[in-house]
Length: 134
Image 1 (tube, rainbow, N blue to C red):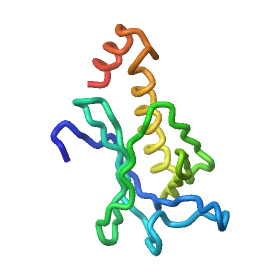
Image 2 (image 1 turned 30 degrees about the vertical axis):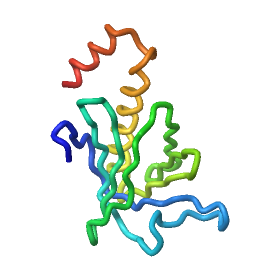
Image 3 (image 1 turned 120 degrees about the vertical axis):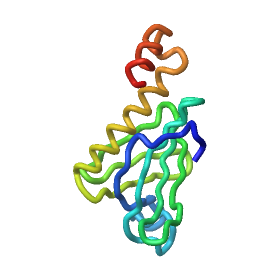
Image 4 (image 1 turned 90 degrees about the vertical axis):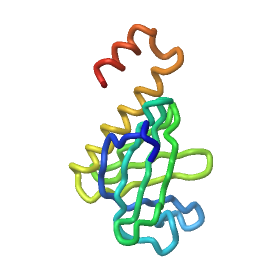
């Protein structure tokens, strides 16, 4: 990890994608069932965020996803959350409600920071937020 990057949350979840053909949720990597350790990393140098998931079993990276401003994060159930981009729909099936809550709080924090970046808020507010987050 770059020194400017820090984890703002950690949760266990299985990472899924929605398969349009079969109309089913499937593991993001074929045959990769089971939980991953999911972190949201905040790059404090350029104020970007990404979701990184590493399989608990074999430490394979299953997802490395840059969170973009305006992403619609949907808490479909207390333990299953999802979001989409132009290519696919991603789902996280969390090990517990608590972990889902921890993750969604961090995701919403990231989206807030991103939406405030350009024109979303006056500079005064952004500086204020930066100070309280430090």
